[in-house]
Image (cartoon, rainbow, N blue to C red; front, side, top):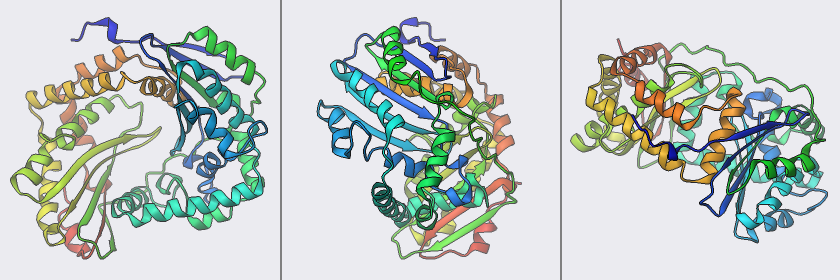
Length: 430
């Protein structure tokens, strides 16, 4: 057990009268301040006709505000002092963030507050950003890895928001009107749906005072709820797209666990053992022993009511039917158990990654802000590490048997050739 309490930073939380939550973590040794604005807005909040609206919002908010009417004026506030500003859209959240030198951090808070509250939403800006997003969508589709991942989502979660691309399609984005965007703004961009998390050499009181001045009168309202996951996969399922590529990309996934599931930590360790390091089972068997791939890796992703456990690799097209049985065998073998050494090593790796990540102010701001948004509470770093340390080999074997099931398996393949029936013949975990 790790005992050094100095590695665990505290956080403070204040909720304004309008429901806006402010979380801070003080890091006295740094000259950087990281500022995150998180909103419960993402692709899982969108109807089919609004697919891509959350992502379009993210783009448009950088085009101009009443106080900073051009994108250049917005970016200069941060980049002009050496900082970084950016944003992201995911299935369950949208985030706006900046990483600022300590002397200038107040201007970063004011800037993103202004963007959230006073975006101009000019018709010309909306149309311009739609064209930028068309290129973003095309770029993702042109990448074999990106296409395989998008297709995997669509077959894991067919005919629902969970399985749609976060950016939508060129057609859905084209049809989003300014009025629809403003209606969406009024339901998702409200105070009780907003988390502001700040980490750096700051005091909680100063941050709360500043945000109170800029955001205490920010509107609140009834938040549109996330579209729930529908378990409508009857696997195994194979999707193949023919492309004239030098490699065949394989993306394999299974339904897994939601964000708050008690076996989440065991699944995270299972993924490390399977394929997250150069000493993992997949890397050793597929690359080192058989030279079937340059890169092969596993991962797990958690959402509010569902999750995915997946493997991705690129291989010589002529070796597709050599590689797949090996990959399936290694995944299936996890249900027979893992060794004490593997369990111990995975824990050390997971804890080490977490500690190293917490050296960065942005990671700390993310750590506290994302937890608050997705589960309305923040587990301390100590709590997360304690949970990992208590996972046993039996816990890992148990979650492997819960998750590794052929009927909840989907495979997406992009490459020059594939016999889908032959691929299906490999996908039985019984």
